[in-house]
Amino acid sequence: MGALNEFLQTKGIYTLVMILFFLGVYGMVLSKNYMKKLMAMNVMQVAVIFFFLCLGQQEGGMIPIFDPAVTDAASYINPLPHCLMLTAIVVSLGTTGVAIALLMRIKEVYGSVEEVEVIRRASK
Image (spheres, rainbow, N blue to C red):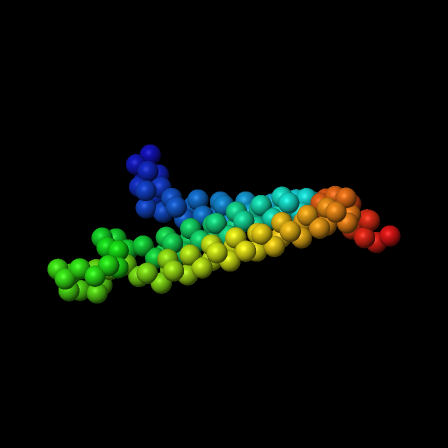
């Protein structure tokens, strides 16, 4: 039991990231509803963002704000992964907004967001 607790304390977030990512893949592949596919894609995006943020952490590191008392640059965490993930969040919101607009248009034209129905009605 102690080994499991130690693993979850040190590597548990990576397990959560893997579960979220594969849950998103599962939803994208097996769901026949376009809205559910979009939600699964967002779960995958969150998993990737969590993963990169976890990689950007440093044991005992401090936030990259200038402190005259700190002379060693290695004491700071790298801000680049955090900046990149902030950009990824903005891109994710943009793609989600465009996807929802497209889904609304699909619903208007075909009367459904179910994949089978849309394909059947589009082939007529």
